[in-house]
Image 1: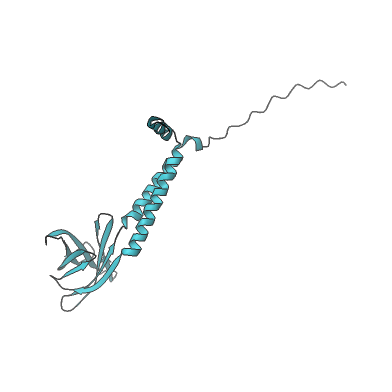
Image 2 (image 1 turned 90 degrees about the vertical axis):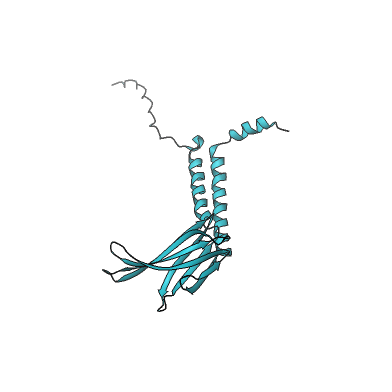
Length: 189
Protein backbone atom coordinates (compact mmCIF):
# COMPACT_ATOMS: atom_id res chain seq x y z
CA UNK A 1 0.00 0.00 0.00
CA UNK A 2 1.26 3.46 -0.95
CA UNK A 3 0.73 6.43 1.33
CA UNK A 4 -1.50 9.22 -0.08
CA UNK A 5 1.35 11.73 0.18
CA UNK A 6 3.56 9.45 -1.94
CA UNK A 7 0.79 9.04 -4.49
CA UNK A 8 0.41 12.81 -4.82
CA UNK A 9 4.17 13.29 -5.13
CA UNK A 10 4.36 10.64 -7.87
CA UNK A 11 1.35 12.12 -9.64
CA UNK A 12 2.85 15.62 -9.57
CA UNK A 13 6.13 14.22 -10.85
CA UNK A 14 4.61 12.85 -14.05
CA UNK A 15 5.75 14.57 -17.23
CA UNK A 16 3.48 17.25 -18.67
CA UNK A 17 3.06 15.21 -21.82
CA UNK A 18 1.10 12.62 -19.81
CA UNK A 19 -1.34 15.29 -18.61
CA UNK A 20 -1.51 16.76 -22.13
CA UNK A 21 -2.33 13.37 -23.62
CA UNK A 22 -5.08 12.78 -21.06
CA UNK A 23 -6.51 16.26 -21.68
CA UNK A 24 -6.46 15.81 -25.46
CA UNK A 25 -8.27 12.47 -25.16
CA UNK A 26 -10.85 14.06 -22.86
CA UNK A 27 -11.40 16.70 -25.57
CA UNK A 28 -11.84 14.00 -28.19
CA UNK A 29 -14.43 12.32 -25.97
CA UNK A 30 -16.33 15.60 -25.54
CA UNK A 31 -16.29 16.22 -29.29
CA UNK A 32 -17.60 12.72 -30.02
CA UNK A 33 -20.29 13.10 -27.35
CA UNK A 34 -21.38 16.37 -28.98
CA UNK A 35 -21.50 14.83 -32.46
CA UNK A 36 -23.42 11.74 -31.35
CA UNK A 37 -25.84 13.79 -29.22
CA UNK A 38 -26.54 16.24 -32.02
CA UNK A 39 -27.03 13.58 -34.69
CA UNK A 40 -29.05 11.23 -32.48
CA UNK A 41 -31.31 13.61 -30.58
CA UNK A 42 -31.54 16.71 -32.77
CA UNK A 43 -34.94 17.66 -34.16
CA UNK A 44 -36.14 19.87 -36.98
CA UNK A 45 -39.53 21.37 -37.73
CA UNK A 46 -40.76 23.38 -40.72
CA UNK A 47 -44.12 25.13 -40.46
CA UNK A 48 -46.10 28.23 -41.37
CA UNK A 49 -46.76 30.64 -38.50
CA UNK A 50 -48.79 33.80 -37.95
CA UNK A 51 -48.22 36.42 -35.26
CA UNK A 52 -49.34 35.15 -31.84
CA UNK A 53 -49.01 31.44 -32.68
CA UNK A 54 -46.82 29.12 -30.62
CA UNK A 55 -44.79 26.06 -31.51
CA UNK A 56 -43.19 23.43 -29.30
CA UNK A 57 -39.83 21.88 -30.20
CA UNK A 58 -38.12 19.35 -27.91
CA UNK A 59 -39.70 20.76 -24.76
CA UNK A 60 -39.18 24.43 -25.68
CA UNK A 61 -42.11 26.67 -26.55
CA UNK A 62 -41.68 29.61 -28.93
CA UNK A 63 -44.26 32.30 -29.64
CA UNK A 64 -44.04 34.21 -32.92
CA UNK A 65 -44.53 37.91 -32.21
CA UNK A 66 -44.61 38.96 -35.87
CA UNK A 67 -42.50 40.53 -38.59
CA UNK A 68 -41.07 44.00 -38.12
CA UNK A 69 -39.61 45.98 -41.03
CA UNK A 70 -36.24 47.60 -40.44
CA UNK A 71 -33.74 49.46 -42.56
CA UNK A 72 -29.97 48.94 -42.49
CA UNK A 73 -27.17 50.92 -44.13
CA UNK A 74 -27.43 49.05 -47.43
CA UNK A 75 -30.41 46.73 -46.97
CA UNK A 76 -34.01 46.48 -45.85
CA UNK A 77 -35.24 43.59 -43.77
CA UNK A 78 -38.25 41.89 -42.26
CA UNK A 79 -37.16 40.84 -38.77
CA UNK A 80 -39.11 38.04 -37.13
CA UNK A 81 -39.30 38.14 -33.35
CA UNK A 82 -39.83 34.98 -31.29
CA UNK A 83 -40.22 34.71 -27.52
CA UNK A 84 -38.97 31.65 -25.67
CA UNK A 85 -41.79 30.83 -23.24
CA UNK A 86 -40.93 29.23 -19.89
CA UNK A 87 -42.97 26.85 -17.74
CA UNK A 88 -44.62 29.82 -15.97
CA UNK A 89 -45.86 31.22 -19.34
CA UNK A 90 -43.48 34.17 -19.07
CA UNK A 91 -40.88 35.05 -21.67
CA UNK A 92 -37.47 33.53 -20.87
CA UNK A 93 -35.71 35.12 -23.81
CA UNK A 94 -35.95 36.34 -27.35
CA UNK A 95 -34.69 35.01 -30.66
CA UNK A 96 -34.77 37.05 -33.85
CA UNK A 97 -34.25 36.08 -37.45
CA UNK A 98 -34.43 38.22 -40.57
CA UNK A 99 -34.86 38.15 -44.33
CA UNK A 100 -32.65 40.87 -45.79
CA UNK A 101 -32.93 42.44 -49.23
CA UNK A 102 -29.90 44.17 -50.74
CA UNK A 103 -31.21 46.41 -53.56
CA UNK A 104 -27.83 47.13 -55.19
CA UNK A 105 -27.20 43.47 -55.97
CA UNK A 106 -30.87 42.44 -55.93
CA UNK A 107 -30.15 39.61 -53.47
CA UNK A 108 -32.01 38.19 -50.49
CA UNK A 109 -30.25 36.60 -47.51
CA UNK A 110 -31.49 34.98 -44.32
CA UNK A 111 -30.04 35.89 -40.94
CA UNK A 112 -30.57 32.93 -38.61
CA UNK A 113 -31.47 33.27 -34.96
CA UNK A 114 -29.47 31.23 -32.45
CA UNK A 115 -30.10 30.76 -28.73
CA UNK A 116 -27.68 28.76 -26.58
CA UNK A 117 -29.33 26.89 -23.73
CA UNK A 118 -26.71 25.11 -21.63
CA UNK A 119 -24.66 22.95 -23.99
CA UNK A 120 -27.43 22.86 -26.61
CA UNK A 121 -28.65 25.37 -29.18
CA UNK A 122 -31.96 26.36 -30.73
CA UNK A 123 -31.75 27.71 -34.30
CA UNK A 124 -34.47 29.31 -36.39
CA UNK A 125 -34.70 30.91 -39.79
CA UNK A 126 -37.43 32.62 -41.75
CA UNK A 127 -38.62 31.47 -45.14
CA UNK A 128 -41.05 33.03 -47.57
CA UNK A 129 -43.80 35.35 -46.42
CA UNK A 130 -47.40 34.51 -47.32
CA UNK A 131 -50.01 36.98 -48.59
CA UNK A 132 -52.00 36.52 -45.37
CA UNK A 133 -49.11 37.70 -43.16
CA UNK A 134 -47.88 34.21 -42.34
CA UNK A 135 -44.26 33.18 -42.72
CA UNK A 136 -42.52 29.85 -43.18
CA UNK A 137 -40.33 29.11 -40.16
CA UNK A 138 -37.66 26.46 -39.91
CA UNK A 139 -36.59 25.39 -36.39
CA UNK A 140 -33.74 23.15 -35.24
CA UNK A 141 -32.92 21.82 -31.77
CA UNK A 142 -29.27 20.70 -31.55
CA UNK A 143 -28.57 19.08 -28.16
CA UNK A 144 -24.94 18.96 -26.98
CA UNK A 145 -23.73 20.85 -30.07
CA UNK A 146 -21.48 23.21 -28.10
CA UNK A 147 -19.51 20.20 -26.85
CA UNK A 148 -18.14 19.83 -30.38
CA UNK A 149 -16.41 23.21 -30.12
CA UNK A 150 -15.59 22.82 -26.44
CA UNK A 151 -13.98 19.45 -27.08
CA UNK A 152 -11.83 20.98 -29.79
CA UNK A 153 -10.64 23.66 -27.38
CA UNK A 154 -9.83 21.03 -24.74
CA UNK A 155 -7.84 19.07 -27.36
CA UNK A 156 -5.87 22.22 -28.21
CA UNK A 157 -5.13 22.78 -24.52
CA UNK A 158 -3.90 19.19 -24.24
CA UNK A 159 -1.63 19.64 -27.25
CA UNK A 160 -0.22 22.87 -25.81
CA UNK A 161 0.40 21.17 -22.47
CA UNK A 162 2.24 18.33 -24.21
CA UNK A 163 4.46 20.82 -26.00
CA UNK A 164 5.46 22.36 -22.68
CA UNK A 165 7.20 19.14 -21.57
CA UNK A 166 10.92 19.95 -21.24
CA UNK A 167 11.99 16.38 -21.99
CA UNK A 168 10.56 16.56 -25.51
CA UNK A 169 12.19 19.82 -26.55
CA UNK A 170 14.83 19.55 -29.21
CA UNK A 171 17.74 21.90 -28.76
CA UNK A 172 19.35 23.79 -31.59
CA UNK A 173 22.21 21.79 -33.07
CA UNK A 174 25.71 23.02 -32.21
CA UNK A 175 28.62 22.91 -34.63
CA UNK A 176 31.10 20.24 -33.92
CA UNK A 177 34.61 21.45 -33.39
CA UNK A 178 37.21 19.81 -35.54
CA UNK A 179 40.17 18.54 -33.59
CA UNK A 180 43.37 20.39 -34.31
CA UNK A 181 45.50 18.55 -36.82
CA UNK A 182 48.62 17.02 -35.32
CA UNK A 183 51.86 18.51 -36.53
CA UNK A 184 53.29 16.36 -39.26
CA UNK A 185 56.98 15.61 -39.12
CA UNK A 186 59.01 17.38 -41.75
CA UNK A 187 59.73 15.19 -44.68
CA UNK A 188 63.39 14.55 -45.48
CA UNK A 189 64.47 16.13 -48.71
